[in-house]
Length: 350
Length: 236
Image (tube, rainbow over all chains, first blue to last red):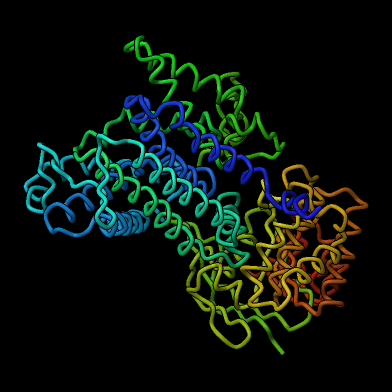
């Protein structure tokens, strides 16, 4: 009876997360000898945090940000530089990397305060694009980014006397599994708190939220800071895992892949983005023999999912009937395709 | 005792002055009606009072100037408003919609839960608490919006065309609700309305706006007899 009551208290998001965790905890039992699959699983974990951090902004707070990989890169470079050149311990470097990314997030958030929708997308994407020449410039060289050569020899994670080696993937897998799920849990708690209510209210109606006493500037900057912190922190882990940081992490291919993860998992439907990360990464590996046609197939899948399943996989697993951002996005696309422009077509996005 | 004093308020959009050198006062506890044709500057006036536009001139609420404050700060001072076209948090159920008002605007209401329940039952939405706002009809949407504003525990309530689009029965219900808000909750209310008939019935004083300017102000009986008002409304 007691267990029944306890189970009732877990909502479907937590249950989904726990099932996911259980499966992921067991996976190495089957794949521990396969370095390639273990590497992909580790990358899935890294991308899943990026995707969840992005979904936190896009799906929950309704802020159309394209700057997530900028935060990822800042976290990766910051922690890489601090540990490599200044000898700061890696665990501390990872946290500082996250904090520096959060600081960058808040700075990028400032010009976005008075902007809406597509304009925020432009500002944040400009930030993303500026980073590449900045990292490669003399300024970048001066602060130790290694310029076009990239940052080589980033020290691996070490806790006490134990050092994680890139050759041994199992410890990496478990530590990142822990980090990823702690991040998911933290972000989920935030979405369920009154802070999360403020985000959703600002997303649904900026005007009404403000007249109900929600300080829009404060909460918008908070979204940027929180999302950038987790993204930057996982970027730092990425740097220490691979040992190399270059501007390749700002490449559009990865950017688009994570976006596909969001759409397939279900925008604003936690933890859909995390599930999407696993599906898309593995699908992408499975389709590798198709070469360049892979992107074409991905494009087709995205269009199909947006039109048919606007809330992605989570919408299929747990239909709510509520009108989420995914649904609105889907309606927008469908309306565009069926050529029945509504009075405010396009407004859904802005 | 006056609760709101507006002094020489002007709001320009480029060349157009939507509100022009407007001054008026609202007494504590009254229902103050604002009427005027489309484009008279009624909604703009609300937007300036609630901080969405800055305007020039001064607005004094409860003895302190509120000009230059941001909307959420004005809410915390005790002014709440509704919107002409219902604004709601469409993905959230009614109870969460009202909760936003109670939590962020309630200024430390000691019992948030109670505050939410009171607001919901006051407007008569009990039993529908968990309905998602997007699935509500127009009247219930308006009621939800009103419940949310009440949950912010305001002293002054601004209602922007509360009855537009409602059926005759709903209109009557809505008018009773506005009067109950005044009497039972002791709020001061400013109502914008198109229909003169509704305003003359519920408001103690009435102001007519035209092209952003005050045409006349006074008890409904006097205002409806004013020559200029008749000209504007009937096209003289």
